[in-house]
Amino acid sequence: MQRFEDQVALITGAAGGIGQATAIRLASEGAAVFCVDLDAEGLQQTVASIEAANGKAFSHTCDVSDEQAVIDTIAICISTYGKINHVSNMAGILRFDHLHETKIEDFQKIMQVNVGGTFLVCKHALPELIKSKGNVVNAASTSSLAGVPWAGIYSASKGAVLAMTKSMSIEYCKQGVRANCVCPGDIITGMASPSFPKNVDMKLMDRCMSPTGRRGPEVVASVIAMLASSDGEHITGEDIRVDGGTLS
Image (cartoon, rainbow, N blue to C red; front, side, top):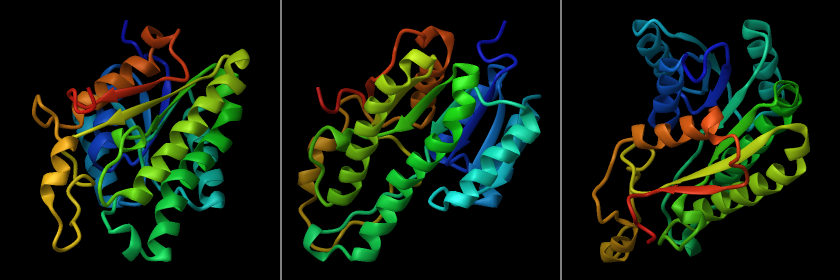
């Protein structure tokens, strides 16, 4: 029996990177996957990959920082599949800037998507997760655990996600809902390849590089699959680093 047979997973950021890898992984283990992202073309590619392997998937475009859009997304997921057993919040924005040059608009956008989007999806999915005694995995980052140059706002947003997730894990544990974070580091994704500010000392990034080499998003998806499955039934409130020893 597959670990996610007869289960429904809602995954944000599913058009690429860790979200896409997670959607494909959970579908390969039997989940019906509700794929959410702003990138409609990327979502189509994710769904096509899942269906090519005889998996079940449905795509829906949504701006997770828009509460009404999130409310509608949860409703469509329920009308499509009838329930939600698992949520992976992988949608996010990464931007490198000198803190003193960061525009308020960029600060607000990063917070709205990374923190606000995670909050809104959790808020409106929780009633369904309580019914199913399901679980949530949110994307934090190694930058929520240690300093990363030029990523002050991103790091702050991921620190907030980490704190919120730990609070959720206690608040909803008696209702059968688990909540954990993955903290990826040095993972090859499109989001992890943004431009850096001009005239910076890239040696400062050496401490952020894995001594075992970079890996693709599939290694993070494997950890998410464990946390989301019954194999992780006694794990909640955790922040699990998937960083190849970067912070060791």
